[in-house]
Image 1: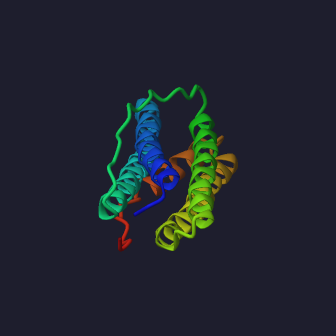
Image 2 (image 1 turned 90 degrees about the vertical axis):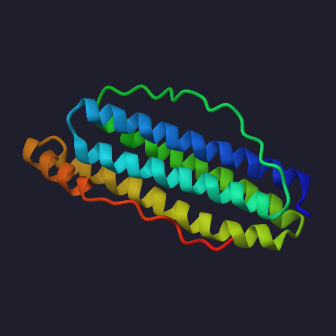
Length: 170
């Protein structure tokens, strides 16, 4: 049986991951409206990944005979005017998610819940990759985004991204 506080934090994370998917879908919507299909694709894939993450937390809770509590998902409230706005908001959001996962990890460690810390190891690594990807996209936009040809090429690069479901064994 999992610790009550750890279960509460895991349930909160399910909802945070679903919110992340909703946020990234909002970013995709912004880029679609700008005619940047590659950027839209990037964030649609991000949305899929976040839904996958939510379902991993969901399944972990069920595998441990815990009830999943689904809360209302708030409307994204990121103000987007420039092409850089969603990119910077994505990095900030990934840092927030990383902090949230670290808090769950710390709570699990405190009660010697080794199964949950082992489960979270994958997410700790994944968040490092998410932050790196967000930083790299900002860097590329800073380098190439102000030039129409560079933006076109970057958009085409992002169009090639495909969704790969996580292979985490619960």
